[in-house]
Image (cartoon, rainbow, N blue to C red):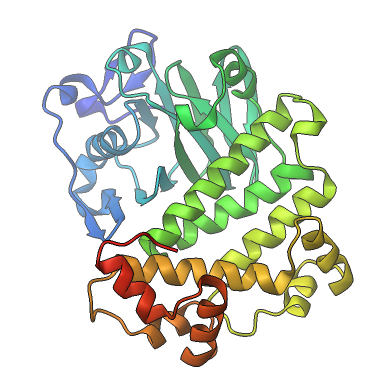
Length: 356
């Protein structure tokens, strides 16, 4: 593989790269932004500047890496969203190679663990003495405080979840056992995690901030559980078959809370189980399906109402946004759960009182 000759140098490891003096003259790349979303694309600069621009974009958004490509120009797009403690980046790019070299690590920009989903194409990954190939649908773990190499032999799409290391609660020795492995979503927790990450990356901009923060927390918990499963933690500490199914059902409900027609039969049908089986799952949690759906809707309504200035939204708008068929139904459910009407509760919150 060759790199743009005008900018190319050779790194200490012999890998062709377009960094060179570019590191000293690095500029923050500009791109389009909307809310929590930022989009950077090499199509915003002349073809001859595309690789320099891409180095800047990756360094500014993810971590520093050498990037080697075919040809003199590079077609790539990077979309980044922030949900709570998660940074989610979707990369779509031409074939190439990346190397997280020691000189980048020494600069101290590796504070997160990357959990990736290979959406399209393939990736040959090397880290911690292991080599593997990620295929479409596979999950990979990357430790950013140690070198890694990845080769993309064809155009690809990769979704990268940057998780603060402290939130995974994994020892460094445990992380070394997870890197350089392809996690196939063929069953168990990986089969739940992979499609959840895919969809979250695709729909991240659509969630209000309170919802985004809750989704991020749930996803990080599921990543941690999956990591523990892969490391062979005691079965008693991990969800069994019913627990995994319950997690999947609860995630589905959270995605569809805004739909008034979200009934037990709809939820059961979406998961290929009977309504009776669905009720049994929630009985083990000392609740019912309908009560759990209602509680989630009320929680989201309270979060949204408490976070809005007076008069910004009506109770009816918030109620309908979270799946209540009418303001009257919302008011009744709220009063039954909290002992106050939504209006009285809001008055108490805005007066500085304790939330019920």
